[in-house]
Image (cartoon, rainbow, N blue to C red):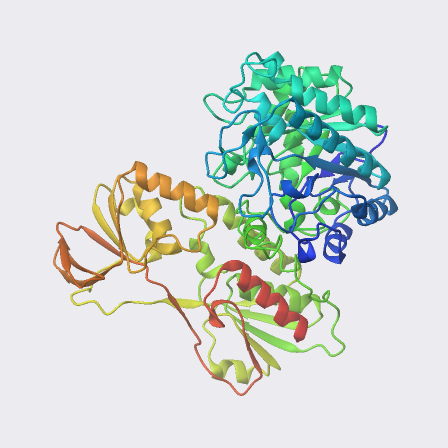
Length: 619
């Protein structure tokens, strides 16, 4: 493999969800995405292909189930080869993890054990089902070779079908395919052998070092598997961890997981095999790359969402572009969230992903532009306007970063500060003037600006509650240690209220959340939501939905439910108000004005950055 790749960087298999009409075919959205990222890479791995129409994970997934898919896949291979980059076709059978919401999907597995997160009860496979499945894999591999793939990557991990045979948690069989690890390997090895007999291109195996389950796959078993795969002729082992069913946070390398854990596991496997091991998992910076090479002696690096956040990540890592890397935050909000929502893969920090915006071009007539507000929307607008050749001045009355300086303070969200750091570096590199003062209409008009971008964010809503005079807002995240061993009521169970509650739990507080709607944590990214709600349950957080606070009387808080019945909670020490935000527009001016971020409409960071980029393309 060393002789076949131009360098150590491999793009990981990313679920894009870009297919039109759910046809499983490659289109311009796929090609544009890969085209923007293929340069400077040793290889790209395709989106996971479904190998039969009834085995899709999402409705908009790419397929390799029929010959009419070959032409489109060959276009991906062609654009890779034009850049001297190899193309790896990733094929997989989800087994019990086929999407239950897609009509005509079917569910086969080692045993009739459903996914822990819900889904259909699968059928335990018999010999006939195994033969059909083996042939389905082989036919998919043949199509990959016809599409000019240089390698096939076969999925043995992440809780998919082959992993379902490998894991004692999902393989309860008592025949020759169950019991000992040697027996549990038999069906996956039959699949491998059938592919090898069907094609001449080499095979990479993707494995989960562990699925982090008490009765699941252990690192020692994965070492045994890797050694056996080496013996069977696999040319490299691609190391991941987790399972989409039982450990989705690890599956997606979410910010709530321990960064570097998969690297340690990969190193253990690397020490026990003689073929290349591909390291994977939140490789997001040049420091990460240096550590992997120096400490773990990594030969190959699998880069996924870092290439989503910054399509030029590898060029910058190789020193071919003297610009800071736009960082992946490991939040899964835009990528996983976009695919789940049916919009396709997007990105919180990269507004160009899955949007048809034109590239930033130099303006024919440069202007003098004021950007009022130095939050993430204001900073995004400023750097793009500067890139167009405009003269830009940012007015910020406090600190660059705005309210996003609170976003990284909740538990396990430290990575979010990296986007603020990126913008600061860009502002310095581009020599954008920052005036640390509050802008007024008089000031803006006196300075002779041609246009102004208002990015002043939003202010918290304060409900009209009788007796409510002393309370905290999200600013408590800056000094959460000031509230310890207290009885706290959080008014509002949306994103901000839930994050504050989670943080205050870390200081041994007794928390009650009051929410008017019928659920809390609406709009929170799914993995974060599930893990946060599990934390609340473990810590006995009282959650009162369909309630509202109507009065505060000293340490007593009076609530009213949907039936207008009142209940009171006594001995409350602290009150947090987090019922929402409202746009803040500080002034009007005769100068042509554009609004971005929360000043335009209260929304999430992704929408703020997208709108800022969009405005910059129009000025």
